[in-house]
Image (cartoon, rainbow, N blue to C red; front, side, top):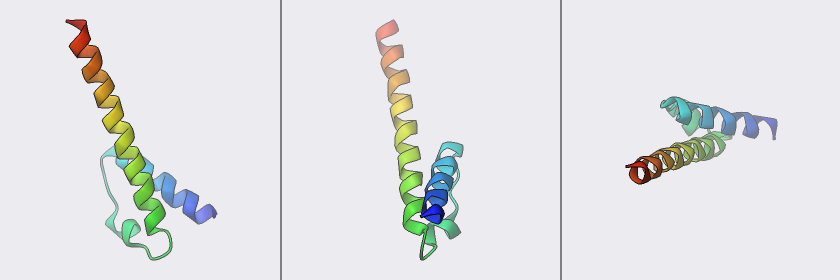
Amino acid sequence: MDDALRAYGAGRIDALAGTRDADRARHPVTGADYRMGFLDGRIEIFRMFAGVRRILDTDG
């Protein structure tokens, strides 16, 4: 379980940094956890940008 959480966290951190570790993503045991963390991080960035766009659209 600890390995899965670490892989998820690493994927999320990589997504927020704009990088992706292909070796971690292909890992047979924790690759799915890494990819899920990466996807969650990318969704967070998307939502952040959507919020900024809403602010800029309603401000003018």
